[in-house]
Length: 285
Image (cartoon, rainbow, N blue to C red):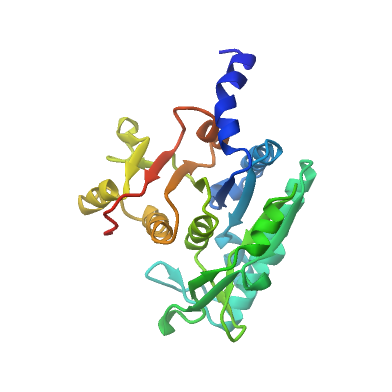
């Protein structure tokens, strides 16, 4: 297919998403490799140029670990979640908002776009309560205040969100980035929520490429988990999607952000590229 034919085929999808909100959760290997990072941000900027209200939400585990090491703070994890004392919460905010967030804003601007970096504590965007005393300053989201996000997204500027949270007393909490991004997508009633990972999506028998699932439901995922086909690092992402589907999200996509133009292929082709997860009545896992 030549370029004009490709653009013509993509046009219905461009019109579908024009003026709609697309929330992208960005992290992992797609953020640490400079070449991949440039490719992902270029795709995001193209989406914005086409009139899509892109909301970029990011994590930053490696940057947090690096800063904690610098200050001699040992990373401790309980059931996959980082134990966070008050100093660690402050350092995590510094890494996410002061380093990762501003780096992404700078890189978008270098590519010719406009971006504003904000965190979950700005305007009490992400309100939380303590998840568990055992985890310290780790927050459970109680409310997403979307006004500041919507104001930015409807302009020519991309909101870039660092996922810290704040409680009613003004204390800062560490928040799981996948959960925060999923919840933001649900509250914004996003047309599409895309969770970038370092694998193409879900497989019924990973890593057998023939078992790749282009589309599935939460009920089908439940069966795969029970059969031991899905585990490890994919579980928190699926739990975050389920959580958001209980709070307004209807569909989500798991997508490999390390593959060039995967965002474009996912949004602007009939085949898609990652795994589309649809909401159903059985939210059990």
